[in-house]
Image (cartoon, rainbow, N blue to C red; front, side, top):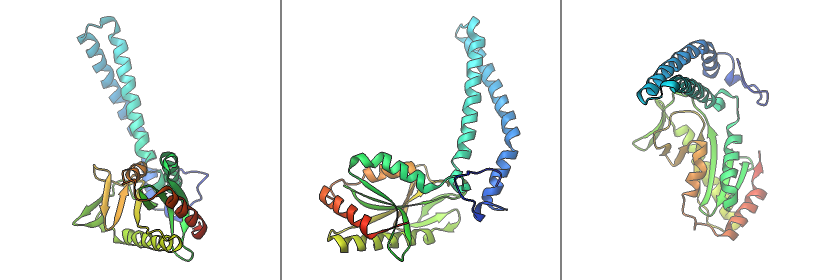
Length: 255
């Protein structure tokens, strides 16, 4: 892999001739071209800055205005370039999505009576990345990432990733939510309904930033806590939240 993190173990998925490997290779090879265009944009910004300085009677300060606008143009273009690459980090295997989402959930929810449990599984069954229990109910959240140009959408109630159906992604999470709800209801006596969610670290979501299809809610990691807090806060009482959290910590296996 041309780049990567020493904190993330190599994965065959991200090496050799994988899409991730080629994406990073081409991005690095294109750096001189991006730099050339950045200088050109900065030059245009410099000229516009001088023109604006003259237009508003800043004759002596027009050069300063030009330099300022040119520097802002250069910096803004560099920032956009860096962000476009940085947001593919999970897809490229340079960062772990569950660590990012877990940190965001705890930062936003922990002070508002929500409990966040990371890496849980029913013994002998598939695991989930996060279990959230709070006044608005219970959620399970997994993390996934697709190539930057993969469009994620809902058509006629069906989930699509590009031209492919998303049922193979949605169905297991919906079934896991039902299994977790059944276990918690049986062990606590509290009627539980769990909402399955998927944090999308890379891929094209619609302008709303949220896709709801086939029983699954998909959104960017930073939107997860907002969606959870938007739910009705009178679903579970403080005593029920505490009971469910203790039971989940005891009955669900850490992974």
